[in-house]
Image 1 (cartoon, rainbow, N blue to C red):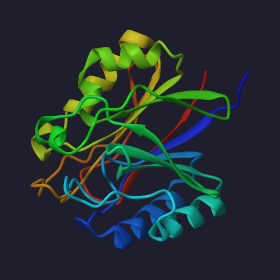
Image 2 (cartoon, helix red, strand yellow):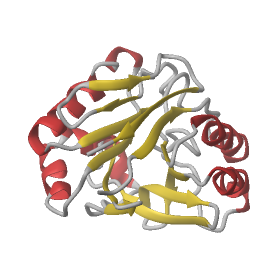
Image 3 (cartoon, one colour):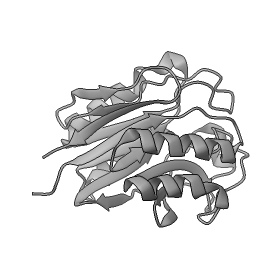
Length: 230
């Protein structure tokens, strides 16, 4: 049996386009989370700014996150615009960063700049984690295609307005019910850029039977943590 997997969902404070300040907030969240994996919201490194410059895997501004991951043994799943161009996820650990995912189901004006990716699974300590970004979680086909690759958990970064606080919970429970997997969703709290002046917070983690096992509140810088078990 694989060891349990400690996972956290973080909703750091965010300043639109300010990658340097946002990276510091990410590093603080990594250190505070005490988890093997920390999941961050959609485009968490830049804010939901569709014109933000693409972030390369060697960007020196990622150094605080790399250092925090090296100190804690953490894998951080960071939201950022990446080469493709994709609305992507960077997997950051003590060795650096790599682009691992591009959002599959683009929404509205996103398609004017970005191209869709494909379902992806990453493996951490024997746990297979399917990746998703925001609208992906609302398209049942996405979870189905990802689950078909073989997953133990479905992890997502999202941005929802403050009146949509229940959305990611509803979607998480559906994925758990359909596929029998753990779900972890990191949602922005506070201003997120791109017209999102007030966002939902309420990042959460749901067990494979659809029960919420950890949930953050509505404020920036909160973290929720749980342990995935078989």
